[in-house]
Length: 468
Ligand SMILES: Cc1cc2nc3c(=O)[nH]c(=O)nc-3n(C[C@H](O)[C@H](O)[C@H](O)COP(=O)(O)OP(=O)(O)OC[C@H]3O[C@@H](n4cnc5c(N)ncnc54)[C@H](O)[C@@H]3O)c2cc1C
Image (cartoon, helix red, strand yellow):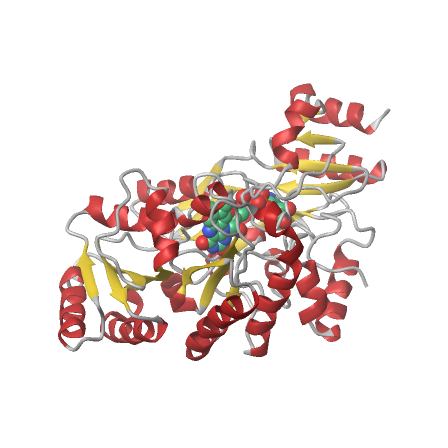
């Protein structure tokens, strides 16, 4: 029996898409940069079906490309150019398996969207903190497999910090039952950590047990106008000292970046013009000090002392969401206006001012017609340093410079002991960076882990680890 027939008889005919028109949306990445054909797209409904599909693919020599919401920014969820790849979509594994209020955990299947997990937490009078602009489409399996960060890492940590247990289908179709909700378990290697952030190259996440937090009672947010990143870090430090972990969001946007966000938000408007902005949010539990009062006190003093240029505190929940929408629309705006050479770099906070200056100098000196679009999670030292084509042009017009720009920007971060990919992962778009910046020891260890878990290279070929 052919692989397609075997998959159809195991999963059902409507769970195996073979027509080009049906496969198309799964074969192209979110940024529209990579589009390679697959043999088929399969849509299993259960963990047992995922395991069966993996065994069938192995028996027929086919390789598997796991796909969640396909919102990843490094083309990790779409095939490489090459034969015999089956895209396995998790979008039909959508059950909430358990909510344990005493343990503060939720157990969900991989295909549930991040936004649905947040809503399920609210229904249970709890809070799930991982939040990013693609949360309506990104799925929990994808968010785990990329160890996504997002807007509230500052206070709650990234996805790795939320995962207490995993269920994973291994490369030979064995199901690893690791769905423990334990907070403490020092019994040998913590195997789940291998799968978090490994971009589907070591195993297929089918379900996860995640931490829940007490509900947030009130939030206050402010948009603050600043002269430069140094001023931004000054105000970040003051508010962090006043609010501690209650400071849940601190985003930095240069003026061009936030203006782009405003242009792509319905009725989007910047409340004032400044060279750069910080978006701050303080969250408070029931009975905690009023977060708005905290923001007002710190910002009033900063304004009086000339440590910020201007500030607007959201006067309503609507206004708070409007501020957030400006920030969240930036990536989409970039895509709609010709794209950008994107980077996702991180350095320690003390080196951020030097990094921003070095990027601005680099562009002014070497690529003067291009437009830097800098924004990101400043509290985590993580900036998206994106370089846009000249106005009215697209990425195709600057294709010749793309590799050199990326090499130059990544090298700046590495020269400051930073990371060239802080939260988006490697996929197939950052493999050159892996080869250039990771040590031989790092790469040898990663290859040894891959060899141990997937000796035949069946899972997500051509991603994460560059060929030796
Ligand atoms: C507008 C926008 C904003 C974003 N903002 C942020 C941000 O602030 N912070 C951040 O960290 N990221 C951000 N991202 C990127 C982020 O990585 C993804 O949105 C999300 O984490 C990926 O989820 P997904 O379900 O779409 O995964 P996909 O794109 O489908 O897959 C991502 C990777 O995980 C693998 N994978 C998917 N599901 C599974 C599974 N069940 N088992 C094993 N492997 C699997 C895929 O093979 C691929 O390698 C943003 C993306 C967009 C489009």
